Length: 88
Image (cartoon, rainbow, N blue to C red; front, side):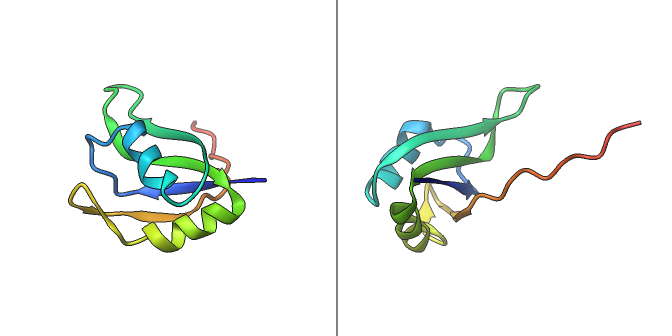
């Protein structure tokens, strides 16, 4: 079973490969998805990493609050996306 982790406060220049390597030190990484702005295409500073459940727990404990690219990472279990209110 896999778990999805939220990774926040990423440096703008971070690549999926760098994030994959960072998390791979703590277990098997299934996927990495960095979020970019729809209009500008620039990184938004956060993303998601999918890992085996046991490895994900280890990665959260090891990486939450750690320094990466001069920034302090926020790593926790991703929450389901809340439904958005319709715009009128």
